[in-house]
Image 1 (cartoon, rainbow, N blue to C red):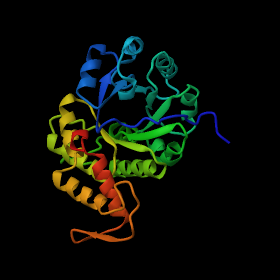
Image 2: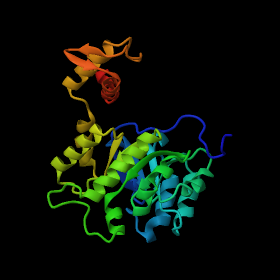
Image 3: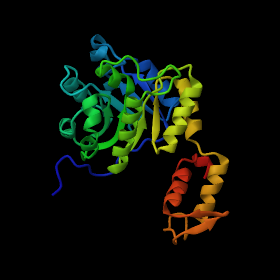
Image 4: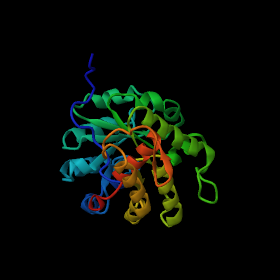
Length: 288
């Protein structure tokens, strides 16, 4: 039997690999953020002080960004601001929300009461990480994101990263389980922000690793990070050439593989065929 909170119609997918946070109380930045990224997350939570949130909600309602390229991050369930955030979203055309500090699947039921609302669950607490699989399984969950800094802070820690900028083991573990849970339930996964804006090499390395693990996009906090992320997600010419050769060798680009076959001296089976399709799917439209 179909449950009342299951979605009808198209499920939102990230329109590109670089998704940019924008404080919801800065409406003068809305259009600029949209122009410089593939999608915008209008943030009612961490980027906005408690005193500024009523004005931020008013700006959200008055704003006119493309709903297909806009996500709204609402405060966690149980906070003073949650109900007001959801009420503001209901007054807009935005129908994709990110639920901060998601910890249980049943928390998505409240958002499911809004007709057509689709939820990206933000996993950024120990309890959320432990329950990520049940959260991903919720019918209104369309994707997952994870957050390192809130996670470590909730554990009483000091930093999610080693001095060289790489993630500590706990953060890497949560990054992995979020990706696994998303894949297990056919949800997309968004990689966490790289807060050191000047560390371009570190951002590039993380974005390349996100691509290798099948992340759909990387979230960023500054427009300067967008081109770095886009370049990392874009297949190289050699990758595209190989992928297209593999797909051409099948019964058609969307056809099923006819067993194991060879392309340029390499044995190709179903997993490599799937990788070839993933590479082609990341190619810019003008390259197709």
